[in-house]
Image 1: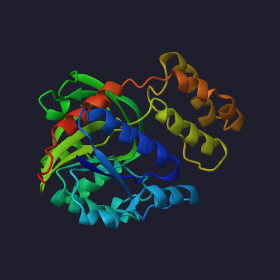
Image 2: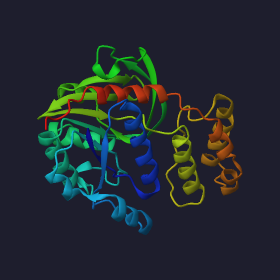
Image 3: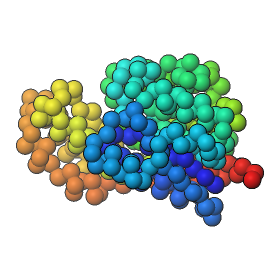
Length: 300
């Protein structure tokens, strides 16, 4: 099979995102060979290093128009605007998804791109959350859904986002929800659009064990150094149980009366990260294996 991979993540997460998604594709492919071609959109701001890597290893999105891959996998992106339609890359993303629905057997769309698809295809509006949804959350599984084959009735997945699309809006648009959390809403939903089976993932099964902790470290650093005044959000269950109380203590201190950079500098993030576990690893692998096994290769 052929897979077009479109990486829209900002520079700081660009390399890790590529590795995380493509590792899942590799593990989920089993004995099937999947050829991956990487693409990037011009509307995402880039620094010198990542721009040079894109120029060397990625293709412009325009080159995808003349091809018909079996799979289209599009990452999320860093939301910069309250209204998704105002993102700099939204028009290019809309054109890509509409093209994909007409030319690709299956599309897997992550986070912001999943929200964009709901806006583009269904007119469902993205809602801004009062605070960041971040952490590892229990999911209820619809075992009758093809993507849920081999899963337990309850699993865990990480989420990290400032926005959502309401569950009722997703259901009203005709999507079938495979995984849902009472705490944070739907996580995986599917629907046929054009010739494509569309998989929307609002969570982040691709995340490493330390992804959420690294995000918190970044946000906490920016806060204590007065690079931003927005309070950092502590991701639920992002570390091993024995490390959780001390991380809570740090969070309470820096968001309380002690906006002290030394507290963040002194916290053993690397040591704590080494003890974190990727409790959702088998769930992520199974989701991707089920997705890939359900794709019919295009006839020559």
